Amino acid sequence: MGSNGLEGKYRDKDKIGNLEDEIDLSAIFIILLRNSRKLALFGFLGFAISCIFAFSIKKTWQGEFQIVLEDNNPSKINNMRGLDSNLAQLISFSGGYDPGIGTQVEILKSPSVLLNIFRYVLREKGLDNNPENEIMFRDWKSFQLDIQLQKNTSILNIKYEDKSKELILPVLNKISSAYQDYSSSKRERSFDLANKYFDEQIALYKGKSQESLQKFQGFAIDNNVPINIFKNVEGDPDLSFELKRVQAVNQNRYINFQLSKINLIPEDSDKIFYFVASNPQIIQKIDLTYKALNQLMSEIPDLKTVYTEEDLLIKKKVAQKKLLLKKLKKEIINYFNSEKENNYALIDATTRSKDVIIKYLQLFKKANRDSATLTSLENQYSVLKLQQSRYKDPWKLITEPTLLPYPIKPKKKNIAFTGGIIGLLIGIGIIGISQKNKGIIYTKKALNDVIEGKFVESFSIDSLDDWAVKINPINKIFLNTLDEKVLFLCLGDLEKHNFETIKENLVKNLDISNFTFASDKDKLYDFNNLVLISYLGKTNMEQLITISNNIQMQGKSILGHLAFYDQSDLFNKLKTQYKRI
Image (cartoon, rainbow, N blue to C red):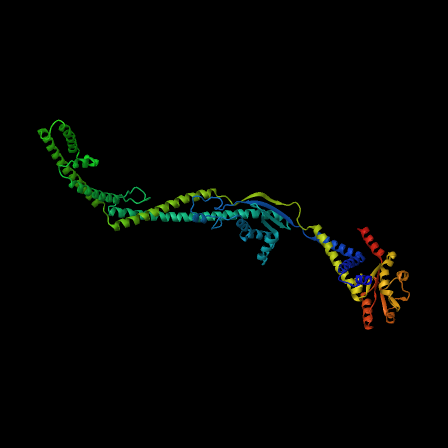
C-alpha cells in the first residue's frame, strides 16, 4: 500500500501538473537570473536609445479655446412666432431647418469652414503646391484638430496642435473668425432668400387682389347686387338682398293666412274686434276706427244695465257697433292687401337668378382669399423684419484662443519607459532563443520529458541534510529490490569538487553497496540498471537525447533521475543584482 502511494507521487503526472507548471516558471526565472547582466544591458540600451529618440523629436505645441453653442431650433424656442411654419423653414439656418447643436459641431468640422485655414497652414509651411493636399487635409483634421462637445453641456472645446509654435494662435483665431463668418453668411443668405420671397409674393398678390376685387365689384354693379365699394371684401359676403326677399315671401304667406281667418268672420261679429286686439301691428294702421269701436264696446254693457234691449238708445248703439265692425273688417283687409303689394314689390326688386348668386359668391370668395393672403404675407413680412433685426449667432466665444505654456509632445518619460520595456523584451527574446539553441536543462521536468524514469528528484548542493529524506524512499521502493549492479552516470561537465561532493554524499545515503559512479557514457552499455545524475544548468539536452537513443536501441530503460543544483550560486546572482539596483 505504501509502495504504490509513493510510486504514484513520482509517476502520476496528472496529479503533479500544477507542480510542473510552477517548475517551468522557476526555470524561466532561473534563465533570466543567470543572464541578468545581459538582460539589464538590453534594458539600458533600449532606455538610452529611447531617450536619444525622445530628445531628437521636434516639440509639438497646443492651443485651445471654447465656445458655447446656442440652440436656436424653433421647436425648442419659439423665435419664429408669427410666421407660417413653412415660411419659418425658409429663413431657418442652413437652408431648411434651424440646426441643433450636433449639426453646428459638424458644420464647424466641415471643409467649408476649415479648408481655407488648412491652405493658410500649407502656405506658411511652404507646402501649398503639394498635389496630395486633399489627403493631407483629412490627416490634418484628424490628427491636429480636436473638436469635441463637453459631455452633458453645449460647450464646444476646440484644440489645435502643431510643431510650429508660431502657427497655433493664428490658426485658432482663423477658426473662430471662419465660423463666425460662415454662420453670419448662412444667416444673411437665408434672410435674403426670405426677403426676396416676400417681395415677389406681396407684389404678385397685390395685383391678384386688385384684379379679383374689381371683377367682384363690377359683377355686383352689373347685376344690381348691393355692395359697399368702400369696404374690403372680408368676412362673409353681403347677402342682405336675398334675406329681404325671403322675409317678404314669408310675410306674404303670413298675410294670406291672416286674410283667410278674417274672411271667415261675419261682418258684425265681435270677433273682428278681438282679432285686431290680438295683432297690435294692425292697430297702428286703423287706430281711429279701433278706438271708436273700443269705446262703443265699453258703453253698451253699461247702458244695458239701465235700459232694455228694446230701448231706442240701445238699438242705436248696437247699430253703430255693427257699422264700425264692418268698417274695421274692411280696413283690416285693405291693410293686409297693401302690405302684400309692398312685399311683392320688394320681392321683385331683390330677386336674382341662381346663376347670378353662385357667380357672385365665387367672385367674392376669390377676392376675399386674395385679400386675406395679401394681408397674411404683409403681416409675416413685418415679423420677418423684426426677426432679422434680433436674430443672434448660434454660438458665443467664452474663452479666447490660448497657447499652452508647455509642449504636449513628445512625452519623454513615456518614450524612455517604453523603450526600456521594449529593450527588456528584446533581451528576453534573444536570451530565450540563445538558451534554446544551447539546449541547457534547468528543471527536473525537462529531464523526465526526454527520458522518462520511475522517479525524478532534485537536490541542492548546499542543503546536504535534506538528501537523506529524499533518498530514503528511493532506496526502499526502487534500489533495495535490485539484484544487479547499478550505474550512476554523471552527465554534463561537472566541476571536480561538485562531482566529489555528489559522489561522497550519495555513498553515505544509499542503502545498496552494489553500485558504481561513472561519467563515461560508454559505460551504460555494461549495465542494465541506470540512474542518471544531472547538474541543472550544466547538462545539455543533446547529451540527454543521445543517451536516450542509445538506451532505446539496447531495449533498456532508466530507473530514474537525480538532479542537482547550486542554490548559493543563484542566491549570489540575485543578491548582486539587488546591490546594483
